Length: 330
Ligand SMILES: NC(=O)c1ccc[n+]([C@@H]2O[C@H](COP(=O)([O-])OP(=O)(O)OC[C@H]3O[C@@H](n4cnc5c(N)ncnc54)[C@H](OP(=O)(O)O)[C@@H]3O)[C@@H](O)[C@H]2O)c1
Image (cartoon, rainbow, N blue to C red):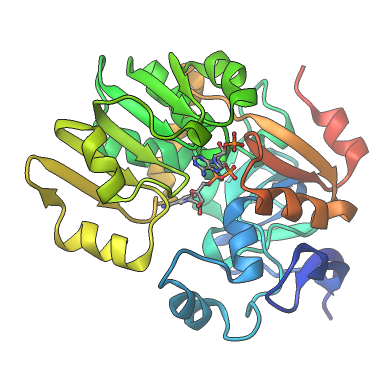
């Protein structure tokens, strides 16, 4: 006999209001998984994209083949969470943990079964909300800036789309690496971008910023090769965090463009990448920014915020306000 739990169910691709809280069978962990009682979960643009099947050009058919033609095959979305180990696993029962489920989702629920090697104890000083918002932007920014661009002190870097979930992490990691950082966002977010480590700021509604840049991190997906090329310094690199199928294939098949380089692709959530991000946090290079939090019952509002394309940092849902508050680190 299975036990039920409350979960946010997405039974059709569509708008935020289609996500409904309902009873759903509690997951039964397989051999390599552990059961976690979720206390907070991020509602990312990745979750919102899957909910709506709204993805960069050319990716739609692939996404529907992988996740379900008319509706998500796994109706519980959510890839990033914080919680409490519900049974002994990689750590003793009761340990505060944070983790990712990958594209299979499942974290927008009271319980999630997650791969044991993708669970980590929550570092001292992080709230449950911060732990839930830790990996999505951080893993993406670290993968692009440290692995693909090999950022070094003095690198002239443009982060295009700098105050959302990926951008907040990118600014911090780049500043820690000593990059000369220009951040784009609306003017009302410029003070916020500077507080995270940006040196120069630019309002993208005023046209393109002044180059040249050694590295351009295009988070917003508004700087394809033809627009970005004039801004690149000789030998510069364009990193397409948001890319159409054709841009992704182009970057794969023709990464060299004269003296320039173009890279795209999915940032991996391997245990090694997660452990590196935790080390960056311990060094003071990265702390997640929680722009908004909602009670679980209002998860549709968190989806709507993610849909907006203008959120600051991460949006999270708190499963049980009282528990999450009580567990907030001092
Ligand atoms: N490749 C990968 O592995 C990977 C991983 C994670 C995410 N992503 C992709 O990365 C993208 C961003 O994710 P996110 O979570 O950071 O999004 P987000 O939290 O919604 O942030 C969006 C950012 O873009 C800015 N922005 C909005 N419109 C813009 C425009 N026209 N020009 C320049 N900047 C603009 C916003 O600034 P204002 O608020 O000031 O407008 C904000 O800073 C998504 O498309 C997501 O799918 C890719």
